[in-house]
Length: 168
Image (cartoon, rainbow, N blue to C red; front, side):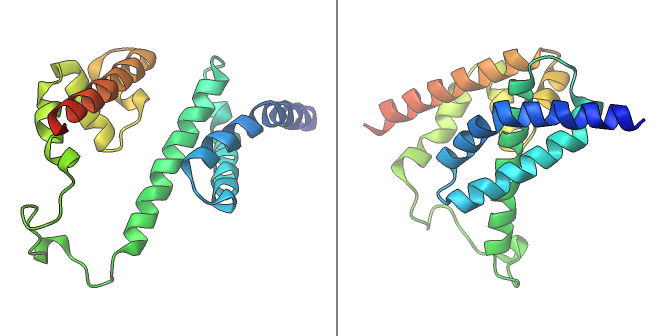
């Protein structure tokens, strides 16, 4: 048994050495603070260690780890948003009216642009907005995860173009 643990540690060390700089660079470009990026990177590698034997299928390690990194970023941002709300904040009691707030011109055009997407892309965007992973989306829609990612990225491009056309 000890031998297997040593082999696992060596394999993990090789994967870490090969992929950690790229994962950290990916996180650093999305986070403003290098220390925060390092912390998130550590969390990613902890998840890799915990999940590699049960969830990794042996193919496309780089894609798998970058999905973990993306999900960790999403989770981290959600925690930050939740921590920034005052203790007494209750959305149900809020009198917030979107019409009264200062809405960016681009945001006003988002809903019509989302509605203009074809049904597949619109549903993938909606799934992603609720925080679902591409694996979950692919299972729900019965398509491969790479297809879900490709459709999502094309939908983002289409939304950006639509918003730019409508706001200019």
